Length: 114
Length: 111
Image 1 (cartoon, rainbow over the protein chains, first blue to last red):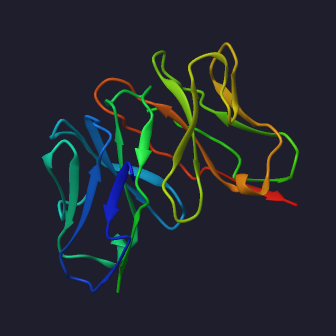
Image 2 (cartoon, rainbow over the protein chains, first blue to last red):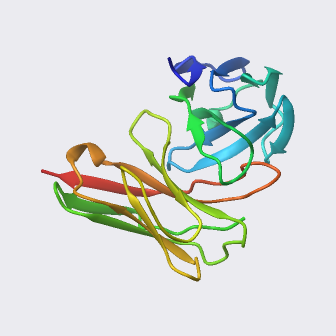
């Protein structure tokens, strides 16, 4: 069983569209995250949720809206997609939000905006 | 948020020991040092974590000097399958796992 799964794996869409990426973890973790990995391979945190509550919201355009229906799911909705949104988006989870806790990552969603 | 600096890339041969050093001069007292490995088209995977001195698991060893301003990931007898990007992180503590992975070190293992 995949611990952290996200769908879709690939997403190609046109500028201006709205799209969602889904993430689910079956590890019973309390904390989930969304990261963005750009073309230079920098992996930067976007959001963090702990028990369905937003605890980290980095400087991300408000076109990006995370939604956590329960602590096992953290979906990412993106409105009015732009070319610069093209990247690989990773979902992750950890037992808690401590820096000493291992994070488990999904396989990533490669988003291409054309 | 402690910044980390590590070499952009390293080459090695199969069977050699590889040491990747990371600098984190402004590490905070309660920060942990964590290393992740990432293969192409996959998410990062936890390798090892430590706070001070030395930590060893079945995959790697992590050496941390007393001042904790740097750390060294040691991979014994690398194989071709160890070719990957290795990220050094200094994790924040309470309030959330807030960190930037940076560009990492691209290790290329040759036959």
